[in-house]
Length: 233
Image 1 (cartoon, rainbow, N blue to C red):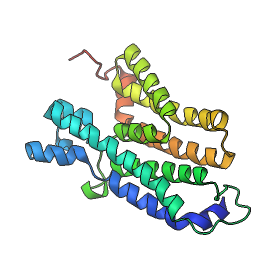
Image 2 (image 1 turned 90 degrees about the vertical axis):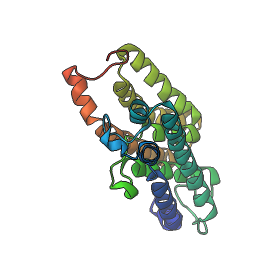
Image 3 (image 1 turned 180 degrees about the vertical axis):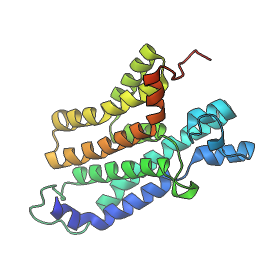
Image 4 (image 1 turned 45 degrees about the vertical axis):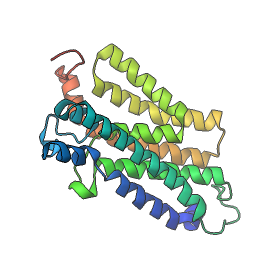
């Protein structure tokens, strides 16, 4: 692992910075400013995300926010893989992460970029480090990283929401399923090196942990039985 870091640290750093800056572009804040002249964080839940935009600004601004959040995470993941493949230094013999293997190298770059994009969305440098909860951004990056993982996450989300009628609970449980699905698919379906699998799972686990922390107020309301449900005013 140290050999790999020594070999690719510059391209990894560049991928991380670019992805973070892309993630820091908060479409919820930008679009709401354009529509109403106000900050989305002063409306409703105070969250800079598509759901709050939908509730306070309407369907069209929410649609543009949704598309923007998806696209920036997809672009970040794509660039992360591209940068690590095109800017890597000469491979080092005996690297345990197989730096000569373009597929594994690109995968590491993609997961790193996805993580940093989510961090940028939640803690945007352009907007005082107060952003959204990262749900749509996580969905976008997962669709590019592995559509099977995305399908598993969406299925868990839909099932939990159907049973509980709580979007927040669905988001939390779906988030927990992502690192588990990543481990199972990368290990048994794709049969990738354990070092690559470990990096991917760790990145997804960090994303999930941050997303859960951002839902801490929702968790309190769920435990207290006061969380809002679909169909209830």
